[in-house]
Image (cartoon, rainbow, N blue to C red; front, side):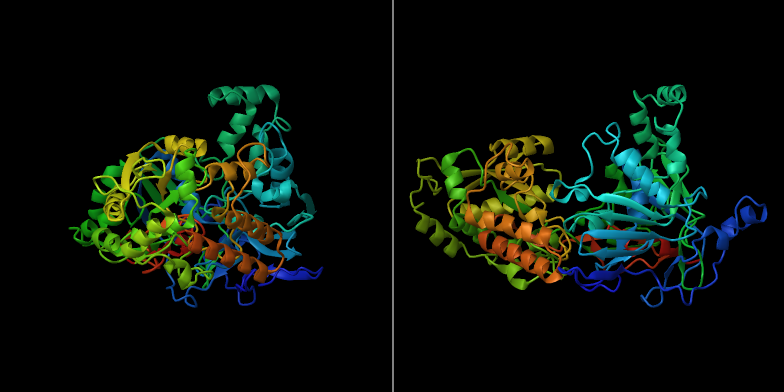
Length: 639
């Protein structure tokens, strides 16, 4: 792992121990905890313990001034607009309390945990913060990890598919140990580079549950008749379904479920307005001792997606990005409300839209052509990316391959620039070189079997700008004698057609983890899944260990799989970095996907009174959790 301050930079291949892979915040100058004013009355009445007794012995101390942020004060209600009741999960995504979490610098550091040590990249020892409590005041201990491991992950009723993939490198389960009340250990016989990053994800792997609460819904601990009655009341058919409904830490739809997030839900969906109040046992505080979060409560207002831009423009949201797209920027900038400010963050995907030639297409004539690198390069050279940038994004984006972004330590300019320049003459020359010299009366080239080169691109069509981009590309490809036809379909229909080999070309967003580090899994760059748009049959073969699909028969793709294996088995950061960069270089050269533009701006609208929101940032799902890595618990309202 690269040096990150919170993470040791090298995973040694030798037997030497990596000491303090993740180090806790220094406890030396730990300030005395300060009580949030809104909780003072409850403390005075004896309904809550004083803040010093509610926080861990070693809280997570955030030095805001060292980070260039401002010390805030407690109070206020943050309003935000959501599309549906299930968006209560945003409290977990934005709240971003994780065992370990990413910083804006893409470093992994302990959060809920006091520390983590890793030996040989395969032995993970997690130490909890003594005195840390769930939102209902019950201690957060190793028992919560034991309960998940024994009673959830290894229970066939609750986990019928077995352990999560991040806990099964090489199909091997770990050995789990409880070392003491606050320390647990997971041991594999081989490196597991997936474990920590999944724990730190926007949709995290929760390897713990509030055991004291969940046991009442588990057949091992609860009375059978009582369980049956509760299941009936909850309108579910089994105790396992009841357990899932009552204990989903990600969906956070049960207000009775204890949480470790900064705010806890008090409203039971479905309601039009979901309310969440501060977690009185939250584990973080600022450098002066104020317990976080600063903001007392969050209100999520359920609003039809089409109304979110209009309501945001009139100041009905204090923090809004969900439901807004690039086309809303002008509206936000010209909004009548004087109370809002529009920030322009950079989106975190490798390409706003990418085209994926299906190298496993059933049509043998097209398949042969799509596998010819000259053809893929010609398609790329024919795209006028600067025109796309100017017409659709006001010149604010960047023409680019589908690759990692400049924010990534893995970025190299050549990865973004190879075969990107608009050069229809070179594209035509490549097509002629292949032998595609015959044309029909409309100037469309002919396939070797005499059919006109009408290339159908299938798209879910969920964003209007994708359709606009494809129209511009269609005009570009007409110049080189290829007719592009767009076929919008439902997402699941497109996926089924890709998997079946019926799709020739599909359009999706590019690499989802554009800010990848060497520790990020490069699974997007290899045939890993049957839904991979450029090689679904190879992906199915890899996914099922040869039970379905087809084995890879293309040298460049076979090399990608070799590099992926090298990355997965590496215990050294340099090896993983080298694997990543060779994979990116192969993709840039081979054009397995054809990128368009990157760095498209995402409007983030905030109240002018809301402090500590970054002026410039990356708007990304992972790593990032949208707002999560910027610590919304440190946002505060200026009075």
